[in-house]
Image 1 (spheres, rainbow, N blue to C red):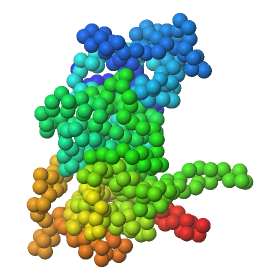
Image 2 (image 1 turned 90 degrees about the horizontal axis):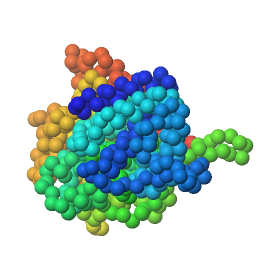
Image 3 (image 1 turned 45 degrees about the horizontal axis):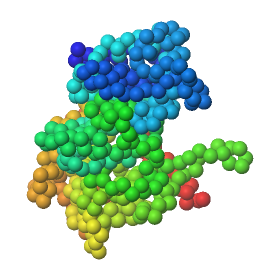
Image 4 (image 1 turned 120 degrees about the vertical axis):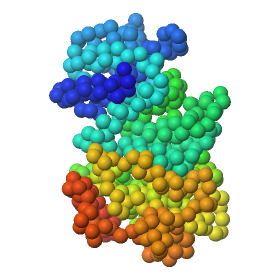
Length: 507
């Protein structure tokens, strides 16, 4: 059975459970628990004989029950009916108190499949496959397929944790991570950047034993504050042969922006969460619910601001080693916002070499109304002069039309950008734009040109929008309607940002 067949088979059962009120995200969560237990069971048998240890059932206070059954797949799969439901609930509760990857997988775990007969169907579905016999690429594709289907369910909001894989692979192809280097993502979601970097290193290097061991257990480091998303990331990584069932977790549940943990990395690849402001809900003295904007007061930040993306950009700069490289997806407001935004841009160009910006079209993210860019920059030692000499910009937005279902963005669509980026030798880049070729999407701007722009604005574009001048070449109605919705969403978000900023000024 191939990976697409397995994905379809597992996902078809999700529709049955949907009728019982089990959402796609909840279903994927249960699949994660059960798949982890099944693989652990397989590893404990020949030819692996890993002797992985699982605890006995614990009571509600977390104390081990004397003569209680072991929390393993064999005991779970042997039960039916009410006994199955009861044991599954106790198993989840018991495993959630464990340490390492095991505890992270089962953190805050609950049974969301209340019908024992349907729970048994899911268990049997997983039990019918020998997961350890599959290659890491097949297991990985199965789980990635489930994650993508879950992200497509816009009602669940899961799309915010799922960056288009074509974009991720393109960013990794430009950065070209090397073996024996550390890679971080301070908002790692389901682990897309880690997996693309892993695949790139495997495919482009002949690794020795030490390099393979480092890649498996020491290369990747991330933060993910949402427990459910974090467990999916851990499972996704494990199915791709990264980490150990009984090993320590390489993911932190902490908010990466709270403080500098003093760890430094060779590469940071990230798509920080969309949204304008960091905030928390509080109850005032009158008992009314209010939202209060959060500003991270860190000495290592250039600016104190409640803008989440500007904070992530500053944090990522802090995470890099002196020779570190970063590729980060950021919304348009980071490129043109005044005040703290302008100062952050100036400091970024002063202290790093901001060498490339990729302008992305709308219609490529599951969150609508997002206009985003990828910033590529290299960290540098302290200097009195700016390290950024010129910034190359590739406009893959103007006159580009994508939709998530009918015309999704592919790696082939971004192949020209990678060629222009010239990762083998960035010093030999050549522009595709000239005065004689005004349709070229690739051109450079000097540091002095950018500094002279109002608010050091990096939101630079030069191509003519054909839809404004050529009515005969309008995109398909579906695409046009999608773009109108995207633009309305973007405009609404911008309006909300203005209102929030005005309120801050008044207060």
